[in-house]
Image 1 (tube, rainbow, N blue to C red):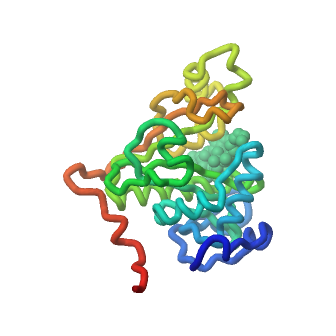
Image 2 (cartoon, rainbow, N blue to C red):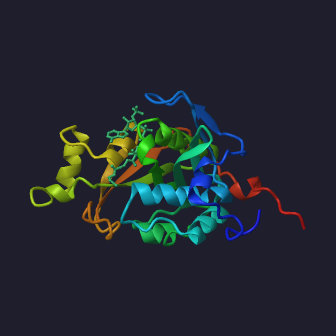
Image 3 (cartoon, rainbow, N blue to C red):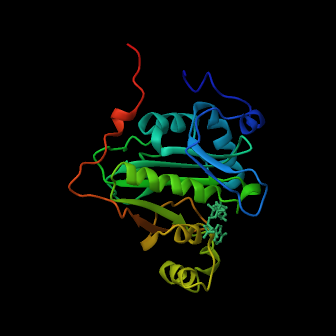
Length: 250
Ligand SMILES: CC(C)(COP(=O)(O)OP(=O)(O)OC[C@H]1O[C@@H](n2cnc3c(N)ncnc32)[C@H](O)[C@@H]1OP(=O)(O)O)[C@@H](O)C(=O)NCCC(=O)NCCS
């Protein structure tokens, strides 16, 4: 497959494209159609659909550019995943291996994943986006299940993520972000992204102030969350992901 410039289908075509790559996971889609949710690696042809999901789900945010998506896939193809149902892309998640250092821009290489480091021990869950009309179907659960399997397979210590706190802006005059997160964790408030990560076994590790300054709903803050790999072996080196990549013909 060539450059992204050669492969840029229209939005509607891309979202309906039947996917040919092998599925990594199949799961029932509770509470909706009977079509199972499948997870597979992101292909070049998926980029338009991913960008469409981001535009619809997070209006006001820039979303990934085509160059960022191509760079992410080149850096770490195993970490770029989409969820499909009936052959349509309904969600996507991206990740990279890092030596964690704290802000979205620095840890993701400003979205290009140039910070991907196979010697790192942390899988950083950079983004999850779900079709607005397909939420609650288990798509994000399936994607995060695939990320946990990847973490185990590569013998990584942990997955780290940062959950936006879009409900915080309405409460900012009444409480600190830490107090707001405490309310969510204790069940006195609901914030979708943090609740989702808690449901996936992530532990709250603290508030990152200024994580994403342009996220006005969250007042720039995010909740740092971590999932520990119970099978991690410190005496084993991380699996060599480079060796698993398809070799190019000379
Ligand atoms: C949060 C989000 C990533 C979850 O994706 P999803 O595919 O709808 O979630 P799933 O169907 O896979 O649900 C997985 C788990 O998360 C929980 N969950 C999902 N959405 C939730 C919500 N809004 N509140 C509380 N828990 C939620 C589910 O209960 C489920 O738990 P379970 O596995 O124990 O059954 C997705 O809904 C999303 O991006 N929502 C928008 C976030 C938002 O509202 N942002 C503010 C405006 S931009």
